[in-house]
Image (tube, rainbow, N blue to C red; front, side, top):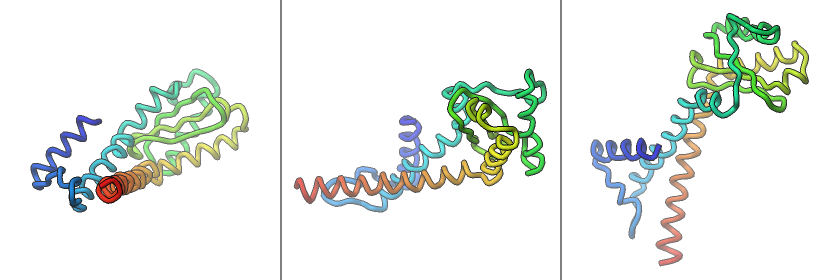
Length: 178
């Protein structure tokens, strides 16, 4: 990620003639700092979105379900996701089960590359109608593109944090510490 950020910052510096050194010193170049904060703020968010499905699979211990060839009644029943996807006119997401407290989530970079997962705790605690409602809720996240929306919100927040932290750091360094 750090290498990717450095490459992006270098390309932007060359193409637009921005001197990142102008973000510190006796004065502060707020234009350069704004561009820097945007790049830093959104690169991490976009990277998180693009890798979210892979990270969920590798860190959550997901048991991927082959809806077309279920091996248990539970797996066969989770074909409910296909019905929900068809009703919403969405591509079929990947489906998974994981060990844990009652919970469910949807992730993925796009509607056509999404993942819906439910925990064993949720499956044990709720009846089929309740689980179907939870799956419908998760499919609504997919249909609405909530993962992309949250990426944009996260990028804006990251941008403000980077920008404000640099301005406050500069002010403390130059004005308070002299």
